Image (cartoon, rainbow, N blue to C red; front, side, top):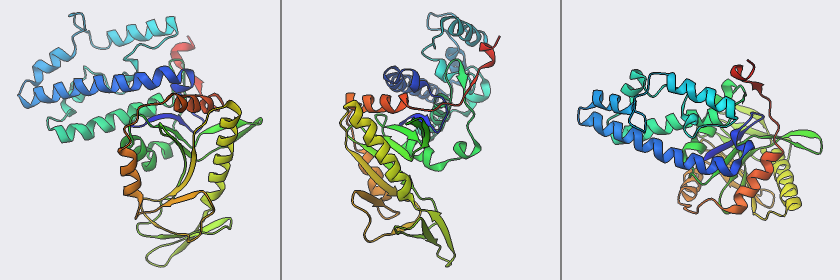
Length: 315
Protein backbone atom coordinates (compact mmCIF):
# COMPACT_ATOMS: atom_id res chain seq x y z
CA UNK A 1 0.00 0.00 0.00
CA UNK A 2 1.58 3.27 -1.12
CA UNK A 3 2.14 6.02 1.43
CA UNK A 4 0.10 9.20 0.92
CA UNK A 5 2.51 11.93 1.95
CA UNK A 6 0.63 15.03 0.73
CA UNK A 7 -2.91 15.86 -0.43
CA UNK A 8 -3.45 19.25 -2.06
CA UNK A 9 -2.86 21.93 0.63
CA UNK A 10 -3.60 19.70 3.62
CA UNK A 11 -1.15 19.49 6.48
CA UNK A 12 0.65 16.15 6.71
CA UNK A 13 2.63 14.27 9.32
CA UNK A 14 5.25 13.58 6.68
CA UNK A 15 6.02 17.30 6.46
CA UNK A 16 7.30 17.14 10.03
CA UNK A 17 9.67 14.17 9.61
CA UNK A 18 9.37 12.13 6.40
CA UNK A 19 12.23 9.81 7.39
CA UNK A 20 10.53 8.82 10.64
CA UNK A 21 6.99 8.44 9.33
CA UNK A 22 7.85 6.41 6.21
CA UNK A 23 9.47 3.77 8.41
CA UNK A 24 6.76 4.00 11.07
CA UNK A 25 4.05 3.40 8.46
CA UNK A 26 5.52 0.07 7.36
CA UNK A 27 6.12 -1.10 10.93
CA UNK A 28 2.65 -0.17 12.18
CA UNK A 29 1.02 -1.70 9.13
CA UNK A 30 2.68 -5.04 9.84
CA UNK A 31 1.76 -4.89 13.52
CA UNK A 32 -1.87 -4.07 12.87
CA UNK A 33 -2.25 -6.72 10.19
CA UNK A 34 -0.94 -9.32 12.64
CA UNK A 35 -3.43 -8.17 15.28
CA UNK A 36 -6.41 -8.32 12.93
CA UNK A 37 -5.27 -11.66 11.51
CA UNK A 38 -5.08 -13.13 15.02
CA UNK A 39 -8.59 -11.86 15.77
CA UNK A 40 -9.86 -13.28 12.48
CA UNK A 41 -8.37 -16.71 13.19
CA UNK A 42 -9.84 -16.71 16.67
CA UNK A 43 -13.26 -15.89 15.25
CA UNK A 44 -12.91 -18.82 12.85
CA UNK A 45 -12.30 -21.05 15.85
CA UNK A 46 -15.37 -19.66 17.62
CA UNK A 47 -13.37 -17.79 20.27
CA UNK A 48 -14.59 -14.27 19.54
CA UNK A 49 -15.51 -13.30 23.15
CA UNK A 50 -12.09 -14.46 24.35
CA UNK A 51 -10.43 -12.47 21.59
CA UNK A 52 -12.26 -9.37 22.65
CA UNK A 53 -10.97 -9.85 26.17
CA UNK A 54 -7.42 -10.38 24.89
CA UNK A 55 -7.59 -7.40 22.59
CA UNK A 56 -8.09 -5.01 25.48
CA UNK A 57 -5.14 -6.19 27.53
CA UNK A 58 -2.21 -3.89 27.93
CA UNK A 59 1.23 -5.16 26.82
CA UNK A 60 2.31 -5.45 30.45
CA UNK A 61 -0.60 -7.71 31.30
CA UNK A 62 -2.95 -5.11 32.74
CA UNK A 63 -6.40 -4.32 31.41
CA UNK A 64 -7.39 -1.25 29.46
CA UNK A 65 -10.42 0.62 30.65
CA UNK A 66 -12.43 1.65 27.65
CA UNK A 67 -11.29 5.07 26.33
CA UNK A 68 -9.18 5.82 29.44
CA UNK A 69 -5.86 4.71 27.94
CA UNK A 70 -6.51 6.67 24.77
CA UNK A 71 -7.25 9.82 26.77
CA UNK A 72 -4.08 9.37 28.82
CA UNK A 73 -2.05 9.06 25.64
CA UNK A 74 -3.62 12.20 24.21
CA UNK A 75 -2.78 14.19 27.35
CA UNK A 76 0.74 12.76 27.43
CA UNK A 77 1.31 13.50 23.76
CA UNK A 78 0.05 17.06 24.09
CA UNK A 79 2.37 17.67 27.02
CA UNK A 80 5.39 16.16 25.28
CA UNK A 81 4.59 17.45 21.80
CA UNK A 82 5.13 13.95 20.46
CA UNK A 83 2.94 11.21 19.08
CA UNK A 84 2.79 7.74 20.59
CA UNK A 85 3.68 4.93 18.21
CA UNK A 86 0.14 3.60 17.91
CA UNK A 87 -1.61 6.98 18.10
CA UNK A 88 -2.07 6.88 14.33
CA UNK A 89 -4.54 4.00 14.73
CA UNK A 90 -6.71 5.74 17.32
CA UNK A 91 -9.68 7.92 16.51
CA UNK A 92 -11.60 6.18 13.73
CA UNK A 93 -12.97 3.39 15.87
CA UNK A 94 -11.96 2.28 19.33
CA UNK A 95 -10.23 -1.09 19.35
CA UNK A 96 -12.36 -2.12 22.28
CA UNK A 97 -15.58 -1.26 20.45
CA UNK A 98 -17.66 -4.44 20.09
CA UNK A 99 -19.16 -3.20 16.81
CA UNK A 100 -15.74 -2.78 15.26
CA UNK A 101 -14.58 -6.19 16.51
CA UNK A 102 -17.69 -7.78 15.04
CA UNK A 103 -16.91 -6.30 11.61
CA UNK A 104 -13.54 -8.06 11.35
CA UNK A 105 -14.10 -10.89 8.83
CA UNK A 106 -13.17 -14.47 9.63
CA UNK A 107 -12.42 -15.24 5.97
CA UNK A 108 -8.81 -14.34 5.02
CA UNK A 109 -9.68 -12.90 1.58
CA UNK A 110 -12.39 -10.74 3.09
CA UNK A 111 -9.97 -9.72 5.82
CA UNK A 112 -7.45 -8.46 3.24
CA UNK A 113 -10.10 -6.21 1.65
CA UNK A 114 -11.28 -5.06 5.07
CA UNK A 115 -7.71 -4.23 6.09
CA UNK A 116 -7.04 -2.24 2.92
CA UNK A 117 -10.11 -0.09 3.47
CA UNK A 118 -9.34 0.24 7.19
CA UNK A 119 -5.77 1.29 6.47
CA UNK A 120 -6.78 3.67 3.70
CA UNK A 121 -9.09 5.63 6.01
CA UNK A 122 -6.25 6.08 8.48
CA UNK A 123 -3.95 7.10 5.64
CA UNK A 124 -6.34 9.92 4.82
CA UNK A 125 -6.28 10.94 8.46
CA UNK A 126 -2.49 10.85 8.61
CA UNK A 127 -2.21 12.86 5.38
CA UNK A 128 -4.48 15.62 6.70
CA UNK A 129 -3.45 16.10 10.31
CA UNK A 130 -0.68 16.24 12.88
CA UNK A 131 -0.90 15.87 16.62
CA UNK A 132 -1.62 19.62 16.97
CA UNK A 133 -3.27 20.65 13.67
CA UNK A 134 -5.88 19.32 11.28
CA UNK A 135 -7.04 20.05 7.73
CA UNK A 136 -10.48 19.43 6.28
CA UNK A 137 -10.70 16.90 3.46
CA UNK A 138 -13.22 17.77 0.78
CA UNK A 139 -15.97 15.35 -0.23
CA UNK A 140 -14.23 15.09 -3.59
CA UNK A 141 -11.06 13.74 -1.97
CA UNK A 142 -12.94 11.38 0.34
CA UNK A 143 -14.68 9.87 -2.71
CA UNK A 144 -11.71 10.00 -5.09
CA UNK A 145 -11.31 6.61 -6.75
CA UNK A 146 -7.93 7.35 -8.30
CA UNK A 147 -6.37 8.27 -4.96
CA UNK A 148 -7.81 5.15 -3.35
CA UNK A 149 -6.69 2.83 -6.17
CA UNK A 150 -3.16 4.20 -6.22
CA UNK A 151 -2.82 4.04 -2.44
CA UNK A 152 -4.21 0.51 -2.16
CA UNK A 153 -2.59 -1.02 -5.23
CA UNK A 154 0.95 0.39 -5.30
CA UNK A 155 3.74 -1.01 -3.06
CA UNK A 156 4.62 0.25 0.42
CA UNK A 157 7.84 1.72 -0.94
CA UNK A 158 5.93 4.18 -3.18
CA UNK A 159 5.04 7.70 -2.01
CA UNK A 160 2.06 9.69 -3.31
CA UNK A 161 1.63 13.43 -3.49
CA UNK A 162 -1.94 13.96 -4.67
CA UNK A 163 -2.27 17.23 -6.56
CA UNK A 164 0.01 18.96 -4.05
CA UNK A 165 0.09 22.72 -3.66
CA UNK A 166 3.67 24.02 -3.42
CA UNK A 167 4.99 27.52 -2.93
CA UNK A 168 7.50 28.18 -5.70
CA UNK A 169 8.93 31.63 -6.42
CA UNK A 170 6.53 33.15 -3.88
CA UNK A 171 3.48 31.76 -5.69
CA UNK A 172 1.21 28.82 -4.83
CA UNK A 173 1.21 26.23 -7.60
CA UNK A 174 -1.02 23.14 -7.79
CA UNK A 175 0.70 20.23 -9.49
CA UNK A 176 -0.47 16.93 -10.95
CA UNK A 177 -0.22 13.62 -9.12
CA UNK A 178 3.39 12.80 -8.21
CA UNK A 179 4.42 9.19 -7.58
CA UNK A 180 7.83 8.61 -6.00
CA UNK A 181 9.10 5.10 -6.76
CA UNK A 182 12.43 3.88 -5.35
CA UNK A 183 14.10 4.44 -8.74
CA UNK A 184 12.20 7.24 -10.49
CA UNK A 185 9.41 9.81 -10.22
CA UNK A 186 6.17 9.86 -12.19
CA UNK A 187 4.22 13.01 -12.90
CA UNK A 188 0.81 11.58 -13.76
CA UNK A 189 -2.39 13.06 -15.14
CA UNK A 190 -5.43 10.77 -14.91
CA UNK A 191 -8.40 11.01 -17.25
CA UNK A 192 -11.55 9.44 -15.79
CA UNK A 193 -14.30 9.47 -18.39
CA UNK A 194 -17.25 7.37 -19.43
CA UNK A 195 -16.47 3.70 -19.84
CA UNK A 196 -14.92 2.99 -23.25
CA UNK A 197 -15.07 6.63 -24.29
CA UNK A 198 -12.23 8.06 -26.41
CA UNK A 199 -10.11 11.09 -25.64
CA UNK A 200 -8.88 12.88 -28.76
CA UNK A 201 -5.46 14.31 -27.97
CA UNK A 202 -4.10 17.51 -29.49
CA UNK A 203 -1.85 20.48 -28.76
CA UNK A 204 -4.86 22.73 -28.25
CA UNK A 205 -6.03 23.99 -24.86
CA UNK A 206 -8.90 21.50 -24.77
CA UNK A 207 -9.22 17.85 -25.68
CA UNK A 208 -12.43 16.16 -26.76
CA UNK A 209 -13.97 13.17 -25.03
CA UNK A 210 -16.28 11.18 -27.31
CA UNK A 211 -18.57 8.63 -25.67
CA UNK A 212 -19.80 5.39 -27.25
CA UNK A 213 -23.14 7.14 -27.78
CA UNK A 214 -21.48 9.89 -29.79
CA UNK A 215 -21.71 12.64 -27.16
CA UNK A 216 -18.72 15.02 -27.08
CA UNK A 217 -17.42 17.04 -24.15
CA UNK A 218 -14.35 19.23 -23.73
CA UNK A 219 -11.69 18.66 -21.08
CA UNK A 220 -8.60 20.67 -20.26
CA UNK A 221 -5.48 19.43 -22.04
CA UNK A 222 -3.67 17.30 -19.42
CA UNK A 223 -0.32 18.18 -21.00
CA UNK A 224 -0.53 21.66 -19.46
CA UNK A 225 -0.36 20.43 -15.86
CA UNK A 226 2.12 17.70 -16.75
CA UNK A 227 4.61 20.12 -18.26
CA UNK A 228 4.12 22.52 -15.33
CA UNK A 229 4.67 19.73 -12.81
CA UNK A 230 7.69 18.35 -14.65
CA UNK A 231 9.26 21.79 -14.90
CA UNK A 232 8.76 22.60 -11.20
CA UNK A 233 9.96 19.17 -10.10
CA UNK A 234 13.05 19.12 -12.30
CA UNK A 235 14.00 22.65 -11.22
CA UNK A 236 13.76 21.83 -7.50
CA UNK A 237 15.67 18.56 -7.87
CA UNK A 238 18.42 20.15 -9.92
CA UNK A 239 18.86 22.96 -7.41
CA UNK A 240 19.23 20.48 -4.55
CA UNK A 241 21.54 18.04 -6.29
CA UNK A 242 19.08 15.11 -6.07
CA UNK A 243 19.26 12.98 -9.21
CA UNK A 244 16.19 10.93 -10.09
CA UNK A 245 14.61 10.36 -13.51
CA UNK A 246 11.33 12.26 -13.95
CA UNK A 247 8.73 10.66 -16.22
CA UNK A 248 5.47 12.18 -17.41
CA UNK A 249 2.41 10.03 -18.11
CA UNK A 250 -1.22 10.45 -19.11
CA UNK A 251 -3.27 7.55 -17.76
CA UNK A 252 -6.86 6.42 -18.15
CA UNK A 253 -8.37 3.29 -16.58
CA UNK A 254 -11.73 3.71 -18.25
CA UNK A 255 -11.15 5.19 -21.69
CA UNK A 256 -9.09 5.09 -24.85
CA UNK A 257 -6.64 7.87 -25.68
CA UNK A 258 -6.21 8.66 -29.35
CA UNK A 259 -3.02 10.67 -29.71
CA UNK A 260 -0.79 9.24 -32.48
CA UNK A 261 2.12 11.65 -32.01
CA UNK A 262 2.35 12.91 -28.42
CA UNK A 263 5.14 15.35 -27.48
CA UNK A 264 8.56 13.90 -26.71
CA UNK A 265 8.79 12.40 -23.23
CA UNK A 266 5.04 11.92 -22.76
CA UNK A 267 3.92 8.36 -22.02
CA UNK A 268 0.32 7.29 -22.59
CA UNK A 269 -1.42 4.38 -20.84
CA UNK A 270 -5.12 4.03 -21.60
CA UNK A 271 -7.56 1.23 -20.72
CA UNK A 272 -5.54 -1.12 -22.95
CA UNK A 273 -2.27 -0.62 -21.04
CA UNK A 274 -3.45 0.46 -17.57
CA UNK A 275 -3.43 -3.03 -16.04
CA UNK A 276 0.00 -3.76 -17.50
CA UNK A 277 1.41 -0.50 -16.12
CA UNK A 278 -0.05 -1.17 -12.68
CA UNK A 279 1.22 -4.77 -12.64
CA UNK A 280 4.71 -3.56 -13.53
CA UNK A 281 4.69 -1.20 -10.54
CA UNK A 282 3.41 -3.93 -8.23
CA UNK A 283 6.32 -6.16 -9.23
CA UNK A 284 8.78 -3.50 -8.15
CA UNK A 285 10.25 -5.00 -4.98
CA UNK A 286 12.95 -2.36 -4.50
CA UNK A 287 13.04 -0.94 -0.95
CA UNK A 288 12.77 2.74 -0.13
CA UNK A 289 15.91 4.51 -1.37
CA UNK A 290 17.83 7.43 0.09
CA UNK A 291 17.45 9.54 -3.07
CA UNK A 292 13.72 8.86 -3.06
CA UNK A 293 13.41 10.09 0.52
CA UNK A 294 15.51 13.16 -0.22
CA UNK A 295 13.36 14.04 -3.22
CA UNK A 296 10.11 13.58 -1.27
CA UNK A 297 11.47 15.56 1.69
CA UNK A 298 12.53 18.37 -0.64
CA UNK A 299 9.07 18.75 -2.19
CA UNK A 300 7.37 18.51 1.19
CA UNK A 301 9.50 21.43 2.40
CA UNK A 302 7.83 23.59 -0.27
CA UNK A 303 4.32 22.38 0.60
CA UNK A 304 1.50 24.81 1.38
CA UNK A 305 -0.60 23.74 4.37
CA UNK A 306 -4.03 25.09 5.26
CA UNK A 307 -4.93 23.80 8.72
CA UNK A 308 -6.47 24.80 12.02
CA UNK A 309 -5.45 24.07 15.59
CA UNK A 310 -6.98 21.04 17.27
CA UNK A 311 -9.42 21.88 20.07
CA UNK A 312 -7.30 20.20 22.75
CA UNK A 313 -4.41 22.50 21.82
CA UNK A 314 -6.55 25.61 22.22
CA UNK A 315 -7.30 24.99 25.89
